[in-house]
Each structure stands twice: as structure tokens, then as C-alpha cells.
Length: 301
Image (cartoon, rainbow, N blue to C red; front, side, top):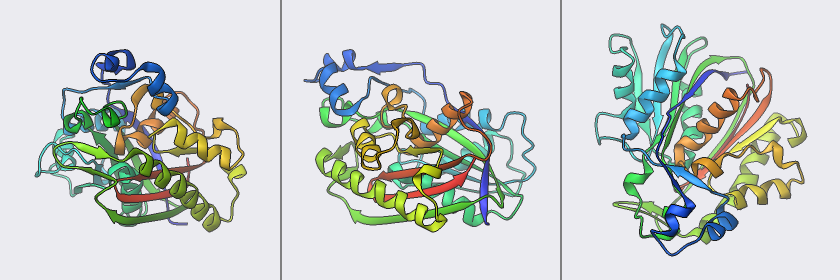
């Protein structure tokens, strides 16, 4: 098998939060309305760029690790600090690895970014080599806080995973369909919520089924499913469809909101910190978002 192992995780700490009570004073909404439709209680707001958040997460994930075999850094982001250099190159510099042979680049697949980045890393790394895969977003920089369709949903975040190429199981399914009407960002992020919901509840089960079929496994054999943390209603719809316990679908969106490419690695870092993930566990990661993009990975912890 041509797989990867997640060696360590780390995430950026963002102290400032924006809760639903604060949003009530900014736009026409209410705590009850937001909770009933999204499950989100608060989101974290950073004054630091996505590059600086990525650097903090990377330093935490690589603490006490031998980086001599690190040959790849990928940052998944739709809010890079610069058009160039990439956030990934800035992470390399911050880790004092400019003299080490390294491939560094950013990838933009919106909320599917981390899943896409892990698959790209699995394809590029040779056995035994290490990669640093980061999801980092400063979405507050592209949110119109007068637009209640978006400002209630999105927050900032960054998390990093240090991975190694090995022989663990690894199955992947990625797909896309070009669309600039449903979800897009220029100066501000705009989205059509109902259409995104329909897209998500179709593509999440499709992605899960693809990787389960490849692995010849059932969902009962999977320990955890970590979906992109977009909306509680979306994730609830999926686990009810599969008639499985909600505990199998990890959720932390109530604390962070939708952090785009950071959401899946942030969930993994939190689960790892809490001791939830044990070696040998089978997990499925599912991303879906702008592009439109979607996909899933089935891997071993």
C-alpha cells in the first residue's frame, strides 16, 4: 500500500472570538437563529495573516521532530498573505529550512484544500520522506460583516500535520465541477446557502461511498469520519442517512465556525490533543467547497 502516516499535529491559538451575541449587534440575526441553522456558537478572529497562523501551527506540529527528511511543505489556503511568495515558502523560512532541499507551494481548493493537499503529498513523497501539510485561513479578511449570509458562518484558523510516506492503507477520491455562481470570493466571499447545502449533502455521501468501495470496507469498520466543518445541519443529514451514531462524525464547528481549508486539520489536531485518535484507527476525511471541489480520503491513524 502506498499510504501516509500522520506523525504529529499542531494548531494556532487565536484568542479573539466573535460569538452569536456579538453578531446580534452587527446584523439582523439572533443566537437562536444561528444555532438552529448552523450549530455555530462562536468563531475565532485573527489579526495575523494566514501565513503567520500557518507558521505557528507548523512550529507546534514539528516541535521535537527530526526534520532532516522533510522534503515537502504544502499550505492549503484561499486567503494567502501574498500573491507571492507562497505561505508555504514563508513557513520554510520560519522553520530555518531554506538550506534544505524542499518543494514548497500553496494550493487553493477552498474548503476541500486540506484533502486535496494530502493527496498531492501522498503522490509526491517517496517512502520514508516527510511532508508538512497545513490548512490556514484568515477568512475574516474577506468577510463582509454586514452580510448575514456569510458573517455568521466563517472564522479564522490554522492547523498543521507532519506526515510520513509509508505502507499504511490510503484510498482517495477527488472531484470538481467549475462553478462561479454558488460560492465565490473576490473582495468578499459570497455564497448561495441553499445551493451549497444541496451540493454538500449530495457529494459527502458520494465521496464516502467511493473510498469505502475502493477499500472494500463498510462504514461500521471506520472509527471516525471528519467532514469539513461547514454546518451542523449538513453533517447531521449525513450521519442520519447512514443511520450511524453521531459520535462517529466528529464536530467542533460550534467553537470555530467554518474555517475552510483549516477545518479538517484543526479537527484532527484537537482529536489528537484529546487522545481520541489511537494508532491503527481507520478514519475518513471529507472535504467539499468552492470550485466546486469535493473528495474524501480513507486512511489509518
